Length: 95
Image 1: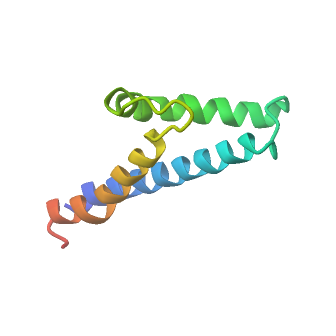
Image 2: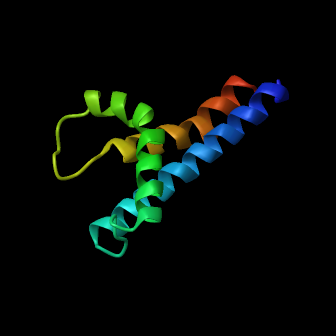
Image 3: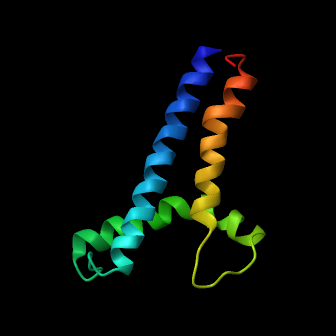
């Protein structure tokens, strides 16, 4: 069971940090600390968007439209945390 549990925990940890970096970067772009006209910043931003769109897309279809505020990252963050801390340990018998 540890052969499955360990990689799942690792994947969820990576997704957790990628979502956190995406949220912080979106704040920095919104407050004009980072500029999307810089090539390096734009590449990271578009790469993160392409990486996280398969996660955010289904969540955005379910959530109501709150146009200026995107709640999909928050919901995805909560799902990852609940999977990591509550659901996976119970499934694999570590709770």
